[in-house]
Amino acid sequence: MHAPRPRPPSPASQALSGIRTALPLMIAMVPIGTVYGAVAVAKGLSVTEALLMSGLVFAGGAQFVAMDMWTHPASAAALGLAALLVNLRHVLMGASMAGKLGRFKPLQRLAAMPFLTDEAWALAERRARDGGRDPAASLTPAWYFGAALSIYATWLAATATGALLGAAIGDPAALGLDFAFPAVFIVLVSGFCKGRGAGAVVLASAAAALLVHWLLPGVWFILAGALAGLAAAALATDEAEGDTVSASIAAGDRA
Image (cartoon, rainbow, N blue to C red; front, side, top):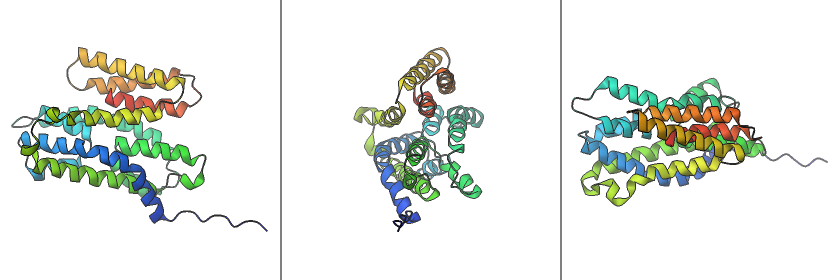
């Protein structure tokens, strides 16, 4: 007699697994969202406006760039261009995810994309990689939305906290909270740096981003870092090709 096959995890248990996996990043996002909320109200936004930006834009990098450029009246064209450049990396992230959503229905794929933040992308990439070795750990819609929506809820809650307590927080840099944002992405990038090629990708992305940041104003350094990382990944001969490409996207965004 054959042993009965183990029953696949239920959608509820998969969603809980996604939440548990995202929990460390959720904790790390709290100071980042709190700083954003405090900065937003300091720039003249109301608590409601700060929450709307977090809810509708949901892109920490773009939101911080927008606050850095914020004036009264705000220049919609300048803010839109800056947000576009900052978020062009989502084209690369979407391309890397395209072949890993085999268990997603078309509508689920569409619903997943607005929540494809850097954190959700990194977690989903690792989940898909682990699922190649263990089908029980495959990337499913329930797991993805458990992780991504919990990150979304955390971002909104942290924004509200920062916006309501902005005056009490004072200067985020004086408290060391400004380092929380790059710290999260150092962790994300390090998780993909496995093998010889990944280190070259990270170095190429960082060097290009720093050089362009020094030479050109604005946020062009983000695009330069991502493109340099992709070029290095294309030349790399590391056997873990997926890891080098993943590292290039993350490193180019945060270099």
